[in-house]
Length: 278
Image (cartoon, rainbow, N blue to C red; front, side, top):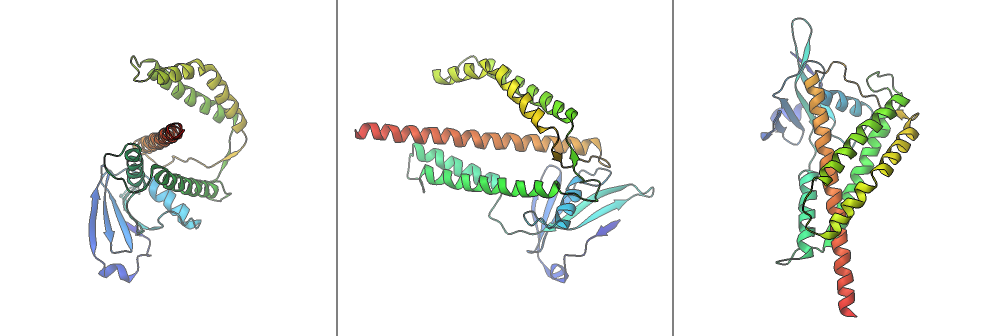
């Protein structure tokens, strides 16, 4: 067994320990207001990607993610390693951003046709959502700026995007667009005629969309990309990362669609109010 990191300090020895949650692949403990201990129940050989990424971001001074305080690693007789747990800096919070966003979007929807008074107008609630989304975007950009820096760490050294990378982007995007078009074409009944018209217009533009995707991908060849290292990770770990990224992408799309829909409803209500006033 190997335990790395000594940043918890003596204060953690007397801190209260609380069980936060038991998720699908890990259990979470808080150690006072000092640290959060994440214990993995699914153990994979090789360096854990969460440890690797957090250690690098911490070493680069990225202050907008919990700092890595240490990790617990099992070392087998043959030298093979597997991460059992990691300790991250405890960050005071009022819940996770996803739950906060869903709550605000729900309240904004209720504000469009309230059965009872709703605190805050729909416009105010959407403004809050915009502010949070913008902050998340800035932090994400700052993180990628760090990952794009020159470094002697081969796992995070940027590489130049080649034509093959661009071709891969085109293929994946075209597959997703095709899947989306097939899903739309499979809808037999539309609740509103204008939705059916929009769907048909989108399907008619499939060739134009594909051309735009290829043009954008070709312009991407040449920029420097953060390294995406998978060495030392088992295939199951890589697949979990891919599924997690896909879920995050779907969540982001859901929020964006909801915001657009709410703005449309708000604009329609304002127009109707103006017409009735005249």
